[in-house]
Each structure stands twice: as structure tokens, then as C-alpha cells.
Length: 39
Image 1 (tube, rainbow, N blue to C red):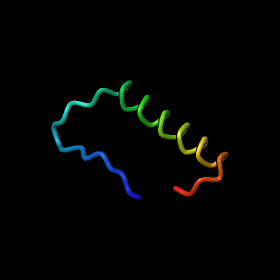
Image 2 (cartoon, helix red, strand yellow):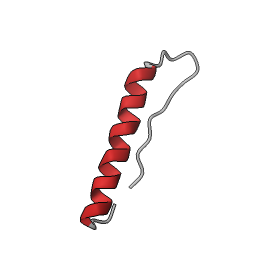
Image 3 (cartoon, helix red, strand yellow):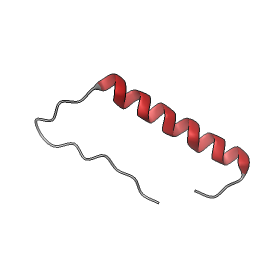
Image 4 (spheres, rainbow, N blue to C red):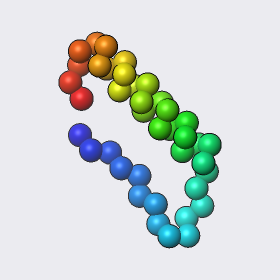
């Protein structure tokens, strides 16, 4: 599975929201690893 967020030149980026999204994605990946579920 591939997931992506497209950013275009001139887009405003909410840095704190982007960081929170990345952190939550990493937490999800770690929890799936512990359960032995394939991604």
C-alpha cells in the first residue's frame, strides 16, 4: 500500500498538523508490527 500527500508550490502547510500526522502514522505502523500484521 502506498499513501501520499501531494504538496504544490505555494501551498500553505500547517507544520504542527503535518508533524502530528507523521507521528500518528509511525505509531500505527509500530502497533501493527507488534501484532504481526502485514502492512
